[in-house]
Length: 116
Image (cartoon, rainbow, N blue to C red; front, side):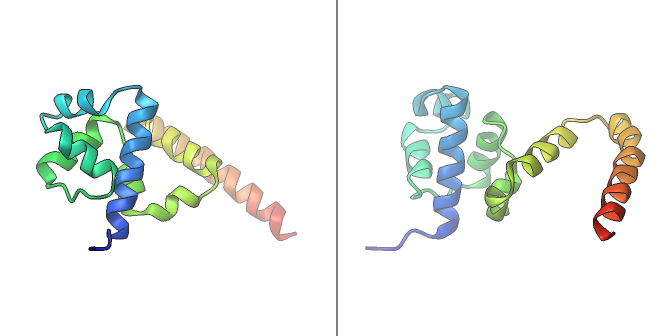
C-alpha cells in the first residue's frame, strides 16, 4: 500500500479542523466550493492531492491561514503567537501602519529589559 505523504496528512487535518470548527458538513463544504463530496472526504483523510481549482476555494471558504498548510511548524507554536498573527492579519493597512511604531517600542522595551 502506498504511503500517504506528510503534506497530504497536514492538509487533511487543517481542513477537517477548520470545517468542524465552522460547523458545516463535508457535503455542505463540497457544495459551497463546487466539488464532489468524495473530494472533500479524500482531502480530509489525507488521500487528496487537490488541484489549485479546488484548494483555493477550499482555503478561502474555511478561512484557513494558508501558512498552516505550507508552514505546518506554525501548528506547534505558542497559541499567543498565532493569536497575535491573526490579530495583525485582520488589520487594515492604516491600522497596521499606526500599530507598527507602538509594537516596535514595546519590543524594544521588552528586549532591553530581558538583556539586563
